[in-house]
Image 1 (cartoon, helix red, strand yellow):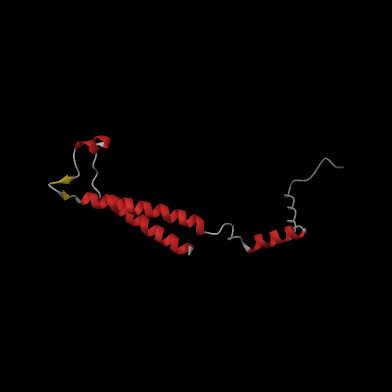
Image 2 (image 1 turned 135 degrees about the vertical axis):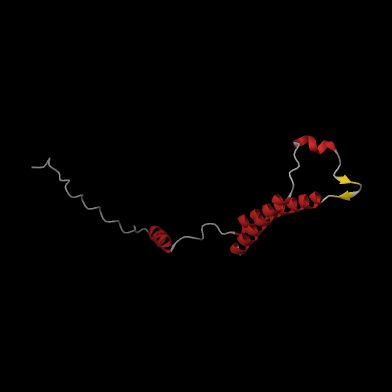
Length: 113
C-alpha cells in the first residue's frame, strides 16, 4: 500500500510540474487581478483550465500526503539485529560487548618501569 501511495504521489508531482511549465507567466503581481476580467468576449481562456488543473493536482497531492502519514506504520522497519537487541534488553540480558581495540604499534607506556 505504501509503494502505491509513493508511485501515485510521484505521478502527481510530474503532472503538476508539466502543467506549471505549460502555463504562461502572467506578470504584474497583485495588480493583474484588478486589471480586467478573465473572459474575452465570453470565451474562457486555456489558462483557466490549466489553473484549475494546478489547483486540483495540488490539493490531491496534499490529501495523498496526509493519507500516507496515517497509513504508513510507525517503527515497523527495524532490522533483525535491532529486534534481537531489543529482545535481549527486554529479557534483562545485555548484548555482547564489542572487543577492545588493539593498541597502536609504536605507542608503549614508558612511564612504567
